[in-house]
Image 1 (spheres, rainbow, N blue to C red):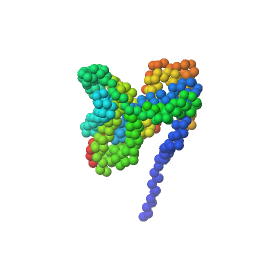
Image 2: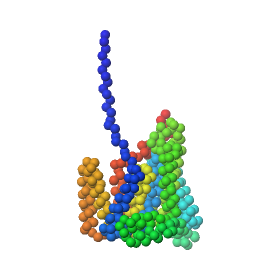
Image 3: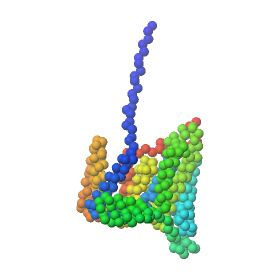
Image 4: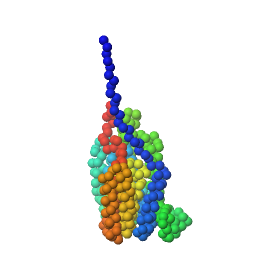
Amino acid sequence: MSTTTTAAPAAKTAPAKAPRTKLSTPVILLIVAGALIAVAAVRAITGARDVTSSGQIGGALQMAVPVGLAGLAGLWSERAGVVNIGLEGMMILGSFFGAWAGWQHGPWIGLLAGVIGGALGGLVHAIATVTFGVDHIVSGVALTLLAQGATEYLAKIWFNTGKAATLGGNPKQSPPIGSVPSITVPGLSPWLAHIEAHHWFLVSDLAGVLGGLITNLSVFTVIAALLFGATYWVLWRTSFGLRLRSCGEAPVAAESLGVDVYRYKYAAVIMSGALAGFGGAFLAMVPAHAYNEGQTGGRGYIGLAAMIFGNWRPGGLAMGAGLFGYTDSLQLRNGGPAAHALLLLLVLLLVLMAAWKFSRKSYRQAVLNAVFAGLLLLWFLMTDTIPSEFVSATPYVATLLVLGLSAQRLRMPKADGKPYRKGQGK
């Protein structure tokens, strides 16, 4: 008796995906150089000198720091798997407690109080989401509403009576806070200002950018920049960071390897609150020198948008925050002519985007980008300035554009926002 065997059909293998190419340092430098040349050309063509002035760049850096810190706070939390919509509330707590301690004891104590206030907000969010399993979005929204109500109530008690009222406090504003120390590079800053005043193509623009980065630079800004570098090193170069990120990718697997997932989630969310509190205290003490009701202005949510644009990494997050800070500074400086000049820059970017989409055979998107570029060019040619109402909206329009352009390349942590209970993998 003979038996015949038939070979099993070969399993179909899915085509291998092309590996994502990471931008190398030379490529990043070329992109930055190209962007600077494009902005310099726009400045030369339109005559809008404020586009690359040191004042505009310094203001952009100042406005970018709170958004960047909020985004960094969201990065810590979401890398551990906890969505933190409550960043706005934590920033409110940071601005209020930072101002409350700052007008009495100086900016450094105020910064510490703001960080502690934000960290307490993070602790509440961690208890609700990690320990009790409350939906992350619900907890974050509730925390923001609670922070708004509590600070409005406390402001009426603490800022509207006694010495605080005598020094200018009222139910919606704290007394003035002392100035935060600033740094100006001696010799170099005046030299760069001298070059900027000549308005040479590219050279003066570069001098304006560098001058804005080293003139009257708040010490708190320097600390914030160091926190970005420290975050990258801790989360991507240490065993602690590896364990924390594993909680946001595969918490069950991390627990099976002996990682205390709850402890790492708590650490991440409390750190998230502390960073958001720093951002709120920065708002109260650097640009404004006082707490004002509604001071955060949705920057906690915009920080989340910057974090998403940065693909949950510090470098891209900093770029997103910088874009918002630039447009925010533009509207604060009443930059109607400069905003009008940026229409031309936006036309150039849309044309480049259309060409890139066409090269990738995304013809529909290429045509759409080209049509928008044509409409914006027509707007630019037929007007001399932009209405102030539109200039005021540019930071939020920029946020929407950033999210729209980055939506196709995002990769969030796999377990971000998903419920997790200890021992659920057993």
